Image 1 (cartoon, rainbow, N blue to C red):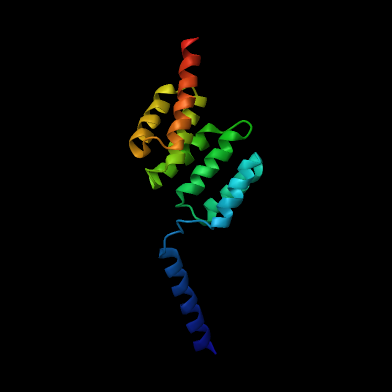
Image 2: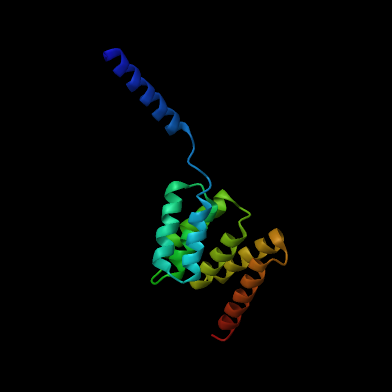
Length: 152
């Protein structure tokens, strides 16, 4: 009996050690991200944040989850810009070619009045994707910000 118990404990400890050594998952469940995008489409920022945060807990190495979480924070009321910037930058650390994170980080910079940083990300998008949708949308937003700045 004691030997069986000792074997069971050793097996559980070994399994826990293997689990602790394995990296966290990189990709959250696709349904989780689809649900987050659906909440964003409905402009249900609180629900989108909850879903994206849950995706991040399960897959902290997911650039998409960081990007969606930051987006849901930024678009909601009273955005905590420190968290917004932290999660967009983490998305880009994990995937430097993440087009959405570049676009949305630049939009966050525009929200805080940092036109120069927004232009930097616009230039990065031009190099990464040329005439992609993310670059086109950001170019329009930067042009609006430039016109607003010129009239001040």
